[in-house]
Image (cartoon, rainbow, N blue to C red; front, side, top):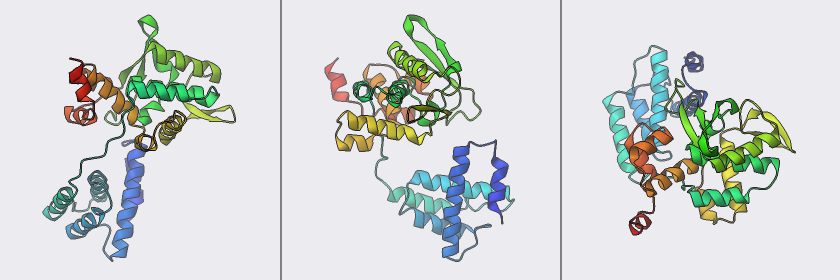
Length: 297
């Protein structure tokens, strides 16, 4: 069965990131099936359950769920009987979840104080000006890294007192592109304008590659956000452990933590970050310094 051909039918209906993950997951499943001499498509429930048991020792439950979703999708595309909903697979997943009882890892929150340290550490170069603006906007808008590198100049609208708002066109939980509005403080807007003026960017994507002081036309890759944060943290002299815990999600986590610490309710925080469920926000803000909050009351 040519499962790669079947995946092409999903183009335009799913994000490129999802399709890329599906391809990787299916290649891993295919390689494992060949190693244990089992059919890939159609796969039996027993084969998939054994795959789950093997993968549970090396990957997270979230990754396992995504791999099962990829296997399910191709079976449906090929009009084959879906093995994923079989009780054998369900039990294998329950065993995997119970075996992985550790709390999920959360990125270090880039709170306002840390944000300012990273911004101040950025060099006064083209790349440094870009990085300052990226860190500031990432915090203000609570953007995921893929959303952040997709921001465009034409989506910025001025507000009162030197602030602005920006349309975040598409996000992980907004596949149809309804969009949401993000807030940009006057301080962050000044950093953004400095970058745009120096880079002579008048339209299109905001955050672009810089090589030898030459500005590219394409958007930064989402993975670049992690590198920019870690490089700025190293220049700011942050501890190695803190740098290791920073990721593209850190700005989003830190802003949410600051909001809850300031007394903002859960619903405004959900609106600011584009969250659909309270449970996700609650996990993001669980590391907020509650002791400090109680002292301030």
